[in-house]
Image (cartoon, rainbow, N blue to C red; front, side):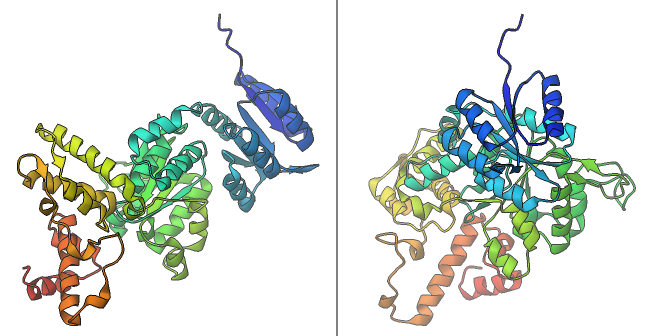
Length: 448
């Protein structure tokens, strides 16, 4: 006989009909419910009982649901709270998510959506195990990394859309994966998509799927990325690269929680959490009218900034040791060691390509070094990004401007080529050059 105690849900709403509907629905889910008619009653119950979830209306006779969210965040931040709002009160829902709410429902409450939300909230990992798991994957003890881990821990316990900002190579996809893996959707798919890598004419089909015969080459029904991520997380990397026409369709899919495949007649309900990232300044893209403001506000409910490697130089040694251990395991060779001068060179390098560049530099040095010791010269760091103290080089020492500019150009092109494994097309894109312009510069600098 199962004697484990039933999980307890606190319902806060001043409308008797709503309270009764929620009580009956949750009771059928074998959950124990407690009801409060106002903010005062809810706070009193929270003092007496331990709850596993709180469902609260936004408008209460003596306050707001937002005040209750803030009250719970201060006293029991691990208790998930879901807000019930009037239909169309998107701004209210977003404010609740920013305040720390787990998710929100709109009135009239749809029972399948309610059951789905409750089940998801009750699957949240217990507090305590999250930080340890994140530390194993996200290396570094610097203050910026400690703060990042703390934010991931908190965001994993929410369903709020998160905009992950940061430079290329800083680890935005890893951060997105950790948010997914430490949350209630961990057992469901994590689907990453590089928005800049999909041809514009195929975008709608890729995102929403297509029906057989809907266009030339559609030889069978194919589900899209939204359907593939159902129940889990869809990570939109380089979201700023989406064309405006696709941004409109993406906004609708997020708002309606449903998609229609190309050639399809009916919409399919999808349950996905949206995480997105870009190395571009998304707010500047909105100002330049290259990114829709309404979509920006839907995606950027909470912004999570990933620090560059320059901002956490104290982590470089730990990261380098980890990379060298992995390389030794992958190659079956003894682990290489960093000469102190090589380590110092790494610490004084600006790393425009961040952690990804550090990995590439060490992979190359691991191959080139003698006697399993990586010397400073094995790193082949671009001199233009090497400094004595991590600051920019002193420009007052320039004797000849043309020679200096040519030197900088050479270093940037070589760096882009190295970071793209000498793929000239990719290097040109990284430098925002046309391929023809790239070819001209290679010839001029004697790099062709």
